[in-house]
Image (cartoon, rainbow, N blue to C red):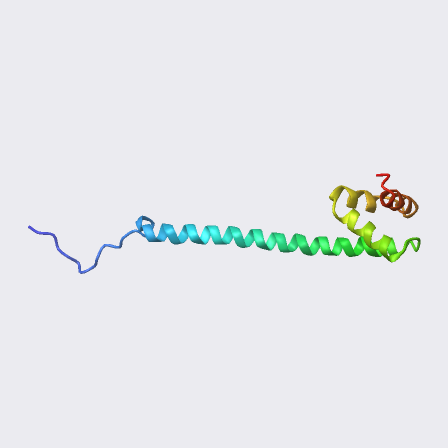
Length: 106
């Protein structure tokens, strides 16, 4: 006796379809790249806020010219360790440290 055909076709497994694999790889790569881009944008925004805080803090010292304020801000913002040191110091020590930085002593 022959097999009875129920009229239903056997579903092919999606996982065995090579096109699904290609699309999945494309999706995974795109997702990773978008995550990287979002992280970079977030970091850039964070650094922008830090630069503003550095500049504002230096300006409050009222001891430097505009050019010195800008130069000190740029010098400090270029290095994460300098940012940490700058914000860890007391107000008085911060003024001395900025002067040392501008004079090339550190």
